[in-house]
Image 1 (cartoon, rainbow, N blue to C red):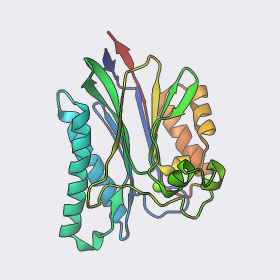
Image 2: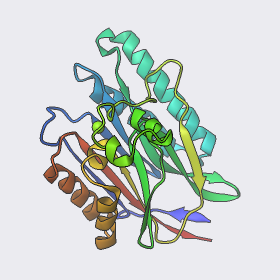
Image 3: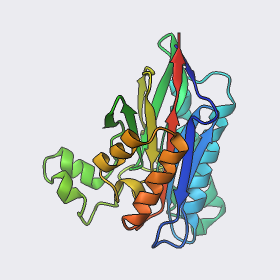
Length: 246
Ligand code: MG
């Protein structure tokens, strides 16, 4: 199975929101590698961190063929570059970033999607009207939910809701999540920073995909809806649709 992505199959949108002064998110849509990174750190270091992460991931787009291990390796390279950047510029100490995305890889005898995640940016998939979250947040509230201590509704207002448990820019390097999945006709992926998922429920995000097909129109509509809902954080969205053939 080959995965085909044409011009027009990808939508990208980002907005600083209504509260923050800087946009510390970075987005990547190059070749067949797509990602969202949400940076953190004072003195504008969050912008640097997320930009380094997407620049390192963008190097994957130049390869003829990618394998799942290449994605894991490149996330480790990004982690190392962030640590090197802090060594060179100590004011950036404490900077880090999430990274979540999808890339076309060769595995199991054909082309597959590799879905990856470090942190609390998210990857969703819409197919035939069904909208599912593929990634698992690496966050304090997700751990509390997994342990049955709090509900999803409590997590949304929990004081620890912004605390992530894995990020790029840490020593030792974080273990990324990676899932490899076959292409499904008609599917669309939505990658987003928490500025989207903290303002809109999964149902609200999914209903936008039910109503709109064009990826750029979806990305613009989601970012606009998050800003209108409060825009308390930077909000970034990448939408990828693709076709596949034998
Ligand atoms: Mg954020």
